[in-house]
Amino acid sequence: MEKKTKDYSKYFDFSDAKIISEDEHSKKIRIRGREINIMAEPNHRKEKQRGKEDVQVLYDNAVPDELKHIGEGKHYIVYTFGCQMNEHDSETIKGLLEQMGYQATEDRKEADIILLNTCAIRENAEDKVFGELGHLKHLKTEKPGLLLGVCGCMSQEENVVNRIMQKHGFVDMIFGTHNIHRLPQLVKEALFSKEMVVEVWSKEGDIIENLPKKREGMRAWVNIMYGCDKFCTYCIVPFTRGKERSRRPEDVIAEVRDLARQGFKEITLLGQNVNAYGKDLKDLNYRFGDLMDDMRKINIPRVRFTTSHPRDFDDHLVEVLGKGGNLVEHIHLPVQSGNTDILKKMNRKYTRERVLELASKIKAAVPHVSLTTDIIVGFPGETDEQFEDTLSLVREVGYDFAYTFIYSPREGTPAASMEDNVPMSVKKERLRRLNIAVNQNSLRFNSRLRGEVVEVLVEGESKNDSKVLAGRTRSNKLVHFEGSKDLIGSFVQVKITEPMTFYIKGDLVETAVAVNG
Image (cartoon, rainbow, N blue to C red; front, side, top):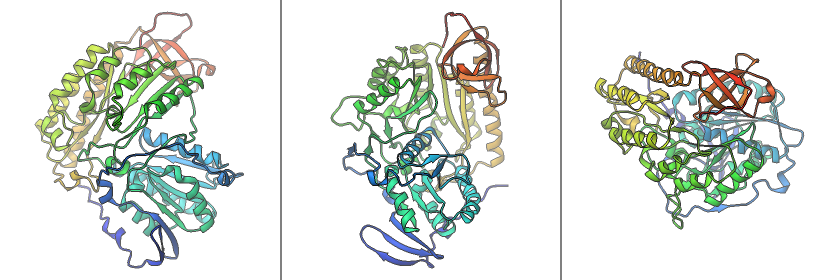
């Protein structure tokens, strides 16, 4: 049975809304007894535009002195949906809340503010958020003073904001990806006005430095750029995250050096498309390869990056990665399809041959590299033969692992207007066959490690057995071994005894021996 397309039009009917006041800065409306202060709302037409205005870099303090005690004696919870970028945004949100005096809690009944930091990549992510709001409605009824907020990528979508205003009037705050730094002011407005506060900027935001972050563990994410200019036909991200904006190299380097001083063992450089870094810095001839070369000179054991795009993966970057050192032997390189015609329909702007050539260059420069990828099956118009091209590419490149997805249309993207003519039963069968091929690769490559000694950064206990520790190799393979909890956060050497598909088992090596990645 085919899934029906959602009807979003019902969320645009505001015939029962009454405008209370309106000026050039905001408007106040009343819907079903709830007053809403709309300071800015998403506009899909504006999100499609790429403004020529210069991006400003601001170094102001995000939390004014008068708001630093507004949360004293109160508690917060932030639920995060989606990618590493959302996780990193949540670190900033938590940092801002703690500078305002709020303390973290895991008990919903103790919380005074609960924020849902959302993802818009796939429809099921949206469904999860609205399901969560349904659960939180009962909590809000029991505790009317609780502040509930929705932020992140979903908030950048017109239909989502309209749906919340129409159907979820118990929500207190909606804000987007470009104005996270405005959280203190939005909390104040929601607390004192008792109105729903909506502030979602459609224009690309400036780059705000010096925002507080609450990081946990021994690994840290570092944003190096924001937004995406690729406009793949299936993807909503260019609209929710805006145009590509690179941070200044000196600011990135200063942040990583500070993390090294704090004792972090691993950093991951983040961006929607990290290897487009620097293209927008008109006053500098400084690209992602240059930044990675500078990362090598910083005393931090491991440096990763995600996610990259085959179109921008240039020879200079390959050359720098080949220098090794703290640059790890793992590259996540989303390919999406192995067929050139489908790649063209996706607007990926590279060919199957380009992917094979790039993979060959990377493998020549970085011995023992682990290549991982993202793949979509069942894109509109994908034939059996075109899917077979994807299967054969997986085998030819030899991906260690792949995140695999069935295509689902996203409202507002060009692909959503294409005829989705691949039956769901066919999509599921293609996904099943693709996963078999990927898993065969994973087991084959993991089996090569049997008897080898690898360096593992210990992350914590295994989810299924408290006596077993879990950590990752430089090539990002998950390793399970028995050991003492005081090893968490440190590097150890593990001899691989039992390679499996999704992780590998090993024994802790007590004496110093040569280590592979």
